[in-house]
Image (cartoon, rainbow, N blue to C red; front, side):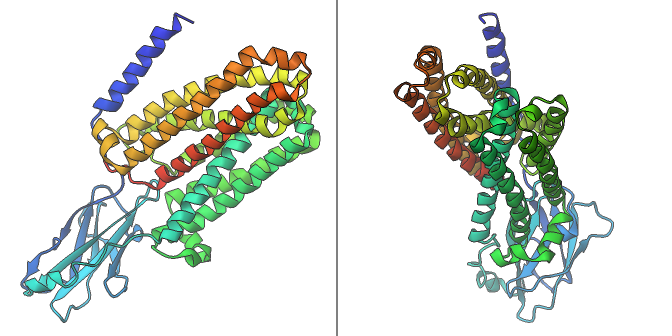
Length: 439
């Protein structure tokens, strides 16, 4: 153990150095320049407006609106790179014109927006629309999207971690009613949250309302984008997960011990974890491959920890079976320790990949949310340490007393507190997905 500590410290030092010293990379798609530029005073009215972004964009992902609410046609600019589009402008009889623009990031579906105004021989006209706000998604749609993603993360963790808990630590749990109910609810919530996320993502990108999240046209527009394809793949994987779950519910403990079923469950759960990371910020930065691998490790560690924790609290501890306590609790304690180590290491890589600098960590809203998540996670680890201490000092007594309620109760309270705090961590994670890293 002592030989591993210097190596672990060296690894963490290297990750911290990379996080604090790496040159920031670009975050979401942003407008670099426009022709005419914002605030220009022109001698004659232009026929079109060109917008140049910091990365290639699809014209369908760029939305330009007049202040009256009319959408303007957008096309790729001729003889220009894929980062420039041309917007056809209508006549401006009053000598002034203002538009709002928005663009959906092709990688993660994040929305960036702004406002442009110019005048034709009417300098004062620029002040007429100066108080108009840039377009922004509906607050109800944004809250709904955060809620859907929170539900998706929670159901994914419960399903993946619950299956691993049953397969690796507690095969008998496949026959226990509470464990079966928990896995079924997790699967149902995962599928429904994925379907809801597709519609809400479309309403978010189109600056629409909650009603727009239910229209077939919204779903069709999202499924034509990279984030939409990732969400569709996740939905199909949830359908395949139903086969895995049904086999477990029908076969019980014998199926949980089957190598064939374990291989199928592993393939489906890894697919679910990967598609969950494909609509996040991990692909941004200098090394997107590092981000993808770290995100997969991060999600896997969190799922094993959270799903096992909830399974322990809901299905194992209420039974107070001494044989199960002696077998399952020490095994989960070791699994949780390894999972937390994986979460910490992968989290450092993701912070380095997405935030990119110490200044961004302290002076952006994304950095603030990341610090809040880290603070809550630290409190969770304190509760987890109390649970581990109980396992070391009191588990043998609980087994000797045949699962005495008074002896097991402190451990149950610690696990319940840990579970509640983990839900807060997942809520902050959902906010991070929709927040702009603000590099």
